[in-house]
Image (tube, rainbow, N blue to C red; front, top):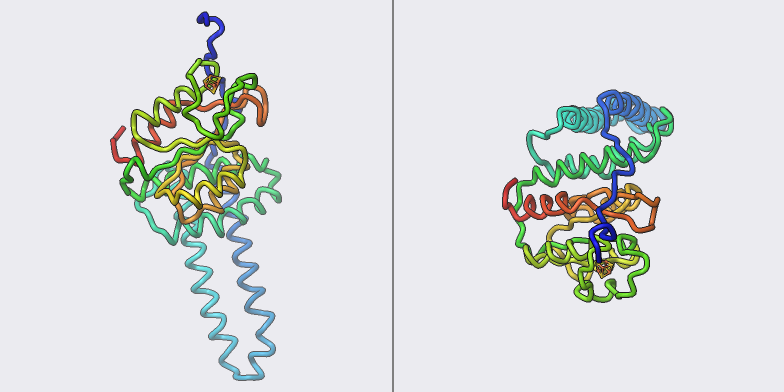
Length: 266
Ligand code: SF4
């Protein structure tokens, strides 16, 4: 194959980084949401509680205030860290808050503020990756799994890489050859998945200690939610031909993700 035929990698399909105003807007709506939900859960049962004991509404109010302060404090902490680009420390509780509370609120707030969902998802992915890196854990290469979507394969390639990625002959028409070289170099597992269900089954069967996942924002977001608390470094794919068709990935990003997780430095 001549150099001109060789696949040269794919350009970025979306150049977007979450901005401060986005984080602040989301936080403001999240704060309003927490205040409203807290008031709702306090006010509704108050009438019945008062008939049991006059002090009960105040006790429930105090409990809800503590919960609201904890949730809001966590959200402010996450937002502040996201705006600065670093988190000072890792906390599993904060990670849980991000995945289970902040994401749904961000999606809701994004709907109210008319922010495209893809921006919310990118923000979530970025925060998740920061959290995973901050865990500071070092994983054995053989316990890492790189999950790639099948759409990364060159469309006309007849080789069945979803059954066994080692079938790839590294012709250079897509990035699977380079990914295979990376997996061999570091001794990490590589799996090309035909879909989300197959990817989830692979994770369930292999029980990796950490995952590097490449996909579009929507698939990464739902995958991160499903996989929690498994540490997953998520890398957004490139889509020069649109979704699900000869997508790509920045090989250097995957290499760095492996190094980060095995503790090989930058
Ligand atoms: S690099 Fe591998 S998977 Fe990609 S087109 Fe060539 S042989 Fe097929």
